[in-house]
Image (cartoon, rainbow, N blue to C red; front, side, top):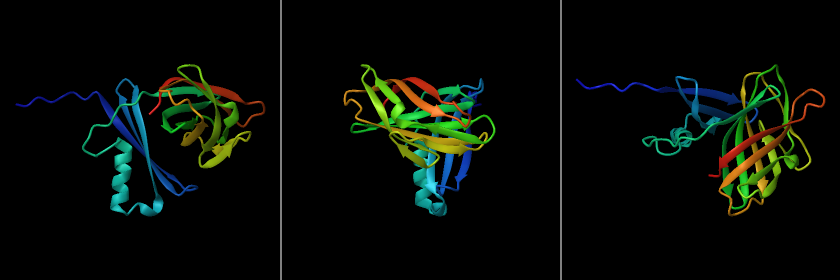
Length: 201
């Protein structure tokens, strides 16, 4: 009689229809039974391509990080809570000397504004070389430099946040500190969110 391996976790899936951007966003999370998240991935595609088989296949490949037959690579989860917002860092990737960090923001309160101020956000690499933020995008709304990328976030709905940094040191392989300058709806509600020890992909 063949043995049956004991399951140690479960994969959760969620589909979000972002009407403003016209994209369908699929989220997959691997979570063990002790509620520890081991990795989280996103894939997106235009709503008009839902019936196109090749587009759906590309989205699946994007979601699992390669061929549908291969094992996906585990990614460490970086999460923090500030001012009633849960921020989760998904990845930081490099293109030449541009660093792009992708995050998910969850509003744990009532519907309210959330924003990021790019120029007051920064990264420090493993040698403490500092680079200021260049542009941030919150739920499809972009702003650069001395402007807030600001959007109203629905309660308990995940929202995509992207921020870019121009001029990252070519030798950098790890971000020692990622600092985001954020704001909520209330007056004087500015706050900083910090992540540490992030590998650059």
